Length: 499
Image: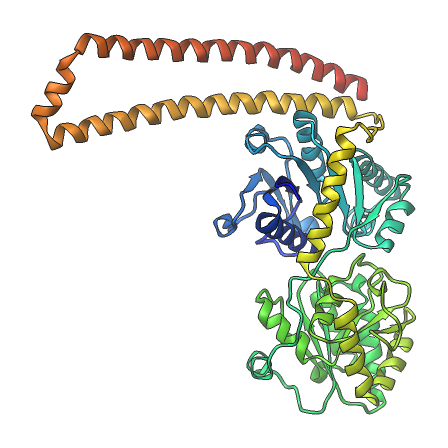
């Protein structure tokens, strides 16, 4: 397989932790390791240390909107980023979010003439409805989202259910299922490590341990879990419920647990970023509870499977794809009574939980190495189809605007590069002066003989170099200025036409 440079774009990346940022990180790590080079383009965030990665992370300006939506919002108009990406001779753009990053991806595609893939990771329409109140505004936001999707050359989804969700919003094109992998190794953690990680918590031997990992949001099915556990306790069956994670609804969830009389049975660890510690919790649990119909892939289900822990899931949900009831997991209806009945049954049959966990490990687990291998093979097909002209770009009202914006970004990027060239010239001249100074300090007499040997010739050569460089800068500035003014006028006309 040829070595490729793949540019990955997303609205989040560590230190922001979520399922999609984790996916982008693992794509980048495995591409850099096995298939060429990766570049990550993402908004700026506080306390980001990108020096720890073996690939470049290019960050563009952002606005802090975490109080509103939980994330920073990227401002996707950055000549600096355009120039830096262009210098890396990218073969393909792989977009992982159809919002701000998509606008930047459009511009890069237009200025670089390379294919653009989008992976549809989650049900963005639910996120929109949680943030935007008002049907007309919601419909407008979803329409803009679909416009971004339609601008891409190929659409991947992380599950069949994710594709169904996208089509339910009005998307009419084709999709390809490209599953995400799991960055946890296959196998349970040693018992001594499990004891060390969990020793501060009340986990009696012989008492079933149930686990939830993820954002503490109601739409993850947390009310179903709590109501089912309340019914289980009323039946006299002991258990411990461990919640790993945080989120906007955490305080409400805790209050509901208290009101349900479950404080003595529930444990909150907060978010766990240490992957080995998280593996220990997966290994300690008897069952993973994930009654979510929101998630399109349910990576946490496969993380649990990596540690031989089976899950209880909603039948027909995306997270339940590939799961057969009582074989490699357990399926319920989307209500607390159904979960409570299944939990009672399983607490009386621990052997069934253990066997289903082993089957899940063998049948549901997929590593990131295998996932990115499959994606990289598809990259080659996309590149061949792009070169042959097979991808037909459908016209959209904003296409001309974005094309003009992309060209404008390229011009501004060139100007930014010229600025860097001028700075480099000054740095080179300063370095030459330092070298001359060092030569003088080491041997003044020898320095004088060298400098006086052909003084007039050296002066003429130096003057000639300066004049040539000044003329190059002048010519380039003049050409870029003319092109910039031309594109600015075109951009103005495109904006007027698109309104």
